[in-house]
Length: 413
Image (cartoon, rainbow, N blue to C red; front, side, top):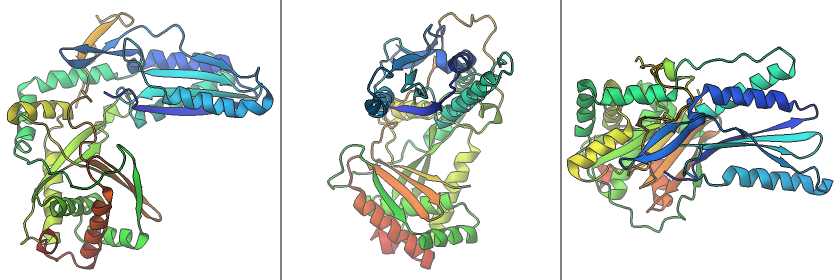
């Protein structure tokens, strides 16, 4: 678990700032969501979440009004930047922080930072929305702000997952998911000079090729992601000379409607394994990618760290696969028992273990975003240069757009 993985938002208030309304609204939010009362502790060599009473001081304060007026803007920017990017201390600390920065009598900045271990972008957006709503209500004198209890907490989710994975149904689902990956060979590293560690290489794919890929998807009645995944499998088979290719994709983990408003980190990974040969056409490869996606969807959802532990125990090594994401434009959970005191420390089920092998970028991480001007993307390599990956990827897409019946042997050999 890396101390630098963080999410944040910053709100700038001008003129008639109501500090009391902001503080009251923020305290209500901390009381409502249990992840904002959580510490992470080591237990049995795994991270566990421990819940505590909220801190007495929820918001740090910084006052820049004593500085010369011409220095306040830069000082405020530097202070907010340092506050946001400072690493978290995992030794018995909450994995979030907030601050009020008074830049002048007319400008106040509120900054909130959340570690990715306990939250995702959905969580961050929800907290921001709730805070601004409560602030608006409090500022307009709409009486005492209504305190809402969360229908479902992150601890409820973790408890139910831990209970399910230990059940016969959970163990069967875990074994089935493991069996499909346990024999997947690790891809050999590309013998090229990589970019600096975790440096992002940005690229674009023009609008004409984007449109051609979408038309190809439509003809085969599949999503754009399915075609892009098929192309990615072929690229890796060509570059690594390995015809059994596994690619990971990130999912938001909020498929159940009950989880849509729960604050917490539900981000997870799914794996798609395809075996290629030269006698296949790209049309065949699209169908294979489609089948791998459907097969995964038909399996009960198994969390990545549970799957990784099972694979390691079975074959002695972790799953290691490139990560490919595409962002287009367009169960019942057990409640926490009432016998658990809400403001006394208590341990629950192990949290998603992001320190497990494979959570980090162990090959490369590539993401494409659908925009009005084409596909915009970036790649974060580790152990390989992105140049050949991107060049080959675009060449495969162009070939497929011209005639999806071309034989894979043209690329594999």
